[in-house]
Image 1 (cartoon, rainbow, N blue to C red):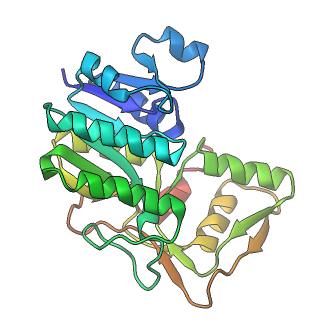
Image 2: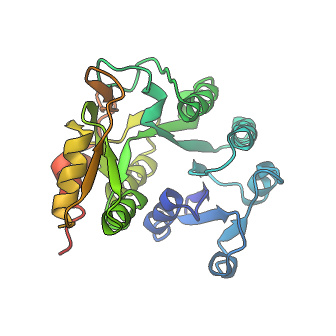
Length: 271
C-alpha cells in the first residue's frame, strides 16, 4: 500500500485530505501544537518546523508521496520545503505542493492557466512562487503543484466567517470588480485523490471551470445559506475589472472531477 505523509494534517486542508486518503492508503500526518486528539492517533507525528528538521521524520517514515499543506512562518516553510526537496531528490518519493491562485495576483487582465508565468505583488504569493520555482527545477515526475482558488463548503473557514459576520451584523468585504473562480473542499480532496491514484505529475489548476465576480459569488452563497440581511462593504481596489482566477486548460481532470461555480454555491445549502 502506498505510504503518504501529509505535512500539516491538523489544518483545514490537510485534515480533509487525511480523511479522504486514509481509507485507501497508508496515510500519516503531522501536527504542531499539543493536541490530545492527534497525540492518541498513532499515525500522527508532532512536528514544529521552526524547531525541527523534517528530514528526520522522512528518513524514518520513507513516504512515497509527501503532501505539503502546512501553514505558518514563511521563512520556516521555505527552509522545510527545501529540506523536503533535497530529500526527494535521493529517494523514490514525490511532493504534492498545495499552492494558491495568488501566484498570479499581479496579473489583472485575464485568467491564468497552468503554464502561464507567475508574478505576484503579495508576500503570500511571492512565497508560494519561491517554492514552486524550486520544485520546477526537479524532474516533473518528482512533483505536483496544485494551485487552488478560494475554497468553500459547509464547514469551511470562509463560510464560518460569513455566518459569524452576518450574526454580528458586521460588514462582509466584497470586491465587485474582481473576477475569480472557486472550489469546494470535498471536490479538492477528490481531485488530489485522483492525482495520486493515477500518478499524475506537473501543474494542476483545481478551481471551477467558469468565473464569477467576487461580490456575486459571496452574495449568492449568503442567499443559499439563507443568512438574514447580510451587510456588504464593497471594496474597489482598481478602476477596472481584475482577474484572480486559475483555470485548467492543459491538465484537465475528468468531467466528474470538474466543478462549476453553481456547484460551489449549492455545496453550502443545508439539506
